[in-house]
Amino acid sequence: MTKAIRISEKGGPDVMKAVDVEVGAPGEGEALIRHTAIGVNMVDVYHRSDTEGQYAIPVPNTLGVEAAGVVEAVGSGVEGIKVGDRVAYCMVLGAYCEKRLIPAEKLVKLPEYITDEIAAACMIQGLTAQYLLHSSYKVTAESTILIHAAAGGVGLIMCQWARDIGATVIGTVGTSAKGELAMENGCDHVIYYREEDFVARVKEITGGAGVDVVYDSVGLDTFSKSLECLRPLGTIVNFGQASGAVPPLDISLLAKSGSVFLAKPTLATYVAQSDQMREMARNLFDKINSGAIKINVSQSVPLGDIVQLHRDMADRKTVGSVLLKP
Image 1 (cartoon, one colour):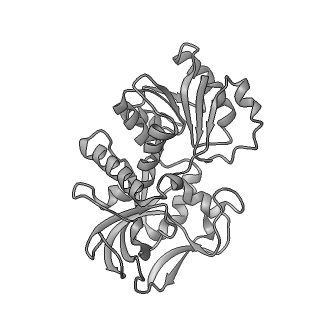
Image 2 (cartoon, helix red, strand yellow; image 1 turned 90 degrees about the vertical axis):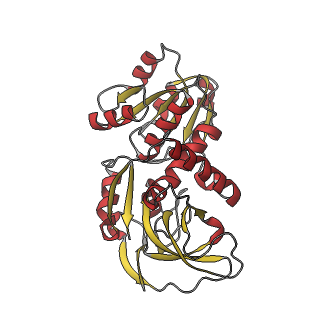
Image 3 (cartoon, one colour; image 1 turned 45 degrees about the vertical axis):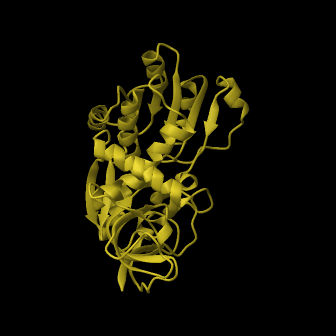
């Protein structure tokens, strides 16, 4: 038997329960993984609470979509993965557990220079940062960008990666401590959204021009004002809803805002093909190995402390990446 964190209904953090589950032998194309570190992400909060929207999942279910660990067994037909390999994965539901079965094609072998903890902390957030900066909008050294929640897990990686590209980075944060952290990680200008009008500050910083792209993981509280931060023909990328989902949109608003573009991407689409996912992971690991990106693991707590951790995430009390220890 192995411990897992499951939900049988949607709701607040208290719906998560630790239970004993039986994990059988791997079938064809599967691997048995013993987790050593489990990533915790805002998408987990959405999965736990969303009843019918974009992030709804069936119940009962085991939460979590990212982890690292060691292969203990493989089924028939598995190639490139063997017992004893250190591996990581992302966007495969069921990570909040000690052991699990998983399709072997979803696994990435870890190089020696990437620890299990760093892998579990960076797969979702790092690959998200990568597609946001390179695919949803192609950031260059001439770009000026606005990142909401700049001291969050994705935000800190984006700030560093954008600095490596040479872009000018503006970030919104809630506290002075988060502001200092964002600046240390490549943010050129910090806006304290609880004290300042972020639209006015963006216009001040950019000399009235606006930014090329806004990266918005907050959603309801920031989306409409973010449109006002864009230059004509700019782009807003909404990739999360920490404050709630963005309401239905009259698309004529995009024209009124300066013929701007709207993207609503998901990481699941970008990593659906195993070859592409592994190539993205290699690019991310190379950036970490070069020192261009450092992964900030702010907390690592036992599996049984997941309820409080979800409360802290919903209240925006966490910074950087947070992990569970199986």
